[in-house]
Image 1: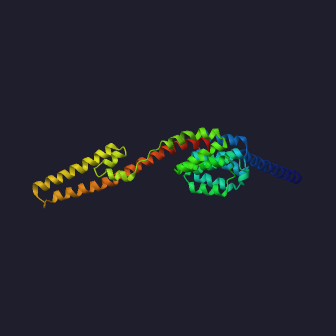
Image 2: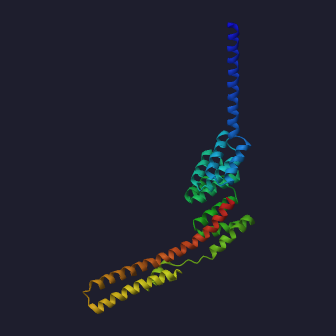
Length: 287
């Protein structure tokens, strides 16, 4: 009886050990399947298609931890950081991979450069370009042209664009030709002229194409100034209300002088923004 009990105990212990070993293997296998299989990658792509970019980033990063260095995974990480409007974190992620520039695939490097343009961190990109990103011609010229356009350095942009003539890069010329045509058509207006035209209230705003603001300035300065004059003429120089209206009219007039200059600057900034809007389209498509 005791022998049978001991045999059952040993058998139960052996079955328990076998079950624990099997369970451990299953857990390890399921963990591997969860983070390092085509199904996991497909799930990350599915999240991206559903525009759940934050979750897609997490899924791609889990795969990167278990099997680092896969191009598709790293592209997915950078792409989703861009789509989630978190470019700085994408830049940091790329730099933590610490790959030698000469061995970085071109498409991965392009995504990294595109994140700089998205973050508007031009100084950091300039520093990286000077330090070496593994770029060869004509890509070096293309990135520097893109950077010059974002920084509104039109002279440098024109020089780099013409460099494509020498390098025989027809594709890049076709991409940037509409942008350069828009740059050539830029006609800035002079802020000092905005102030000068504002000697006549509203003239600066009209010079900047802001007719409604210009007519509003003329109306405010004219009405308050005329009312102050009328009260002075009717009640004499000691009238408090007349002096108050005169002060308000003077304030409107001074603000009108400053507003004329600001209106011209906004006009020029709007022109630059139009160029950058076209450029953003190229950035999204090509970087």
